[in-house]
Length: 311
Ligand SMILES: NC(=O)c1ccc[n+]([C@@H]2O[C@H](COP(=O)([O-])OP(=O)(O)OC[C@H]3O[C@@H](n4cnc5c(N)ncnc54)[C@H](O)[C@@H]3O)[C@@H](O)[C@H]2O)c1
Ligand SMILES: Cc1ncc(CO)c(C(=O)O)c1O
Image (cartoon, rainbow, N blue to C red; front, top):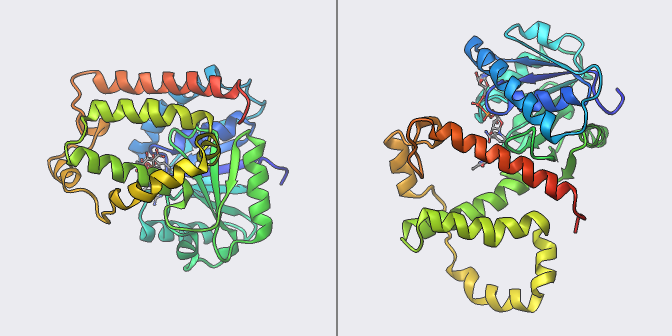
């Protein structure tokens, strides 16, 4: 296989599948998007049209030859494929069942990359016949806009596959980040450390949701989008970090479970955008408007970040 696979298959066409498929197709791959549910495929075809429009406005011109087809016929989706990207729900038993189903239908040389948010690759590979072909490929949401992918080998992943996946990611102009295996991987460990403290601050009434969003967006997010945390420490001074972390770290939230007020919201059917209410409430049309604002903001920020030096 040259760097980019000629044919790739995405398994699972929910939140992540259409954006992943569109990104590979834009780089020139023939992509088959498969789902077990015909309704999910219908939704994915509509989502793909939106994603394609977004890519037109943010990306360089698409490479010739790329395409996405949609379907619920697994054998058709797998014919001659070189790379399978699994994006089914985050349940270990389901993913293991999907891998068994795939392995019964494909040759030993076909790569299986999993978009798990953090289940250890070694655990997922335990039931596989060719565990060397499984590798973590963690895209960030929305996958067609966040140009970074975490690459996570399990204990049995072949080292050739690690090199190959890094080249594949570079071939569609994304930044591969190679990591050692750890639950949650790097991105979600950092995100969930931030979210744990944020939820504790809300639960204790220290700040309002609006205040928290403004503080994190401008005080942390804006800065960290230009300078990563390691360089940030050089900018601040390691002596300052020592002085503050010496008294602050022991005061930070250290709870090990999901906060009770989040559990209560979930029990009341408040899940966020998908139920028109979660941390905030949304009236008619508000969710669509917010989604559009977020995508517009991400496009503008990505263009700006791409045009400035990587510090
Ligand atoms: N949503 C995110 O922000 C995000 C970000 C990064 C990684 N991930 C990870 O990506 C994976 C998919 O997440 P998502 O948010 O797209 O999930 P989702 O629930 O939106 O979509 C999953 C899709 O998989 C389909 N599916 C279920 N069983 C299947 C099977 N046996 N064969 C084929 N398709 C099947 C469902 O019909 C559904 O359309 C998860 O592992 C998740 O942790 C999600
Ligand atoms: C809260 C949260 N949890 C998991 C993920 C993906 O693994 C994301 C994301 O945005 O990618 C997220 O926001």
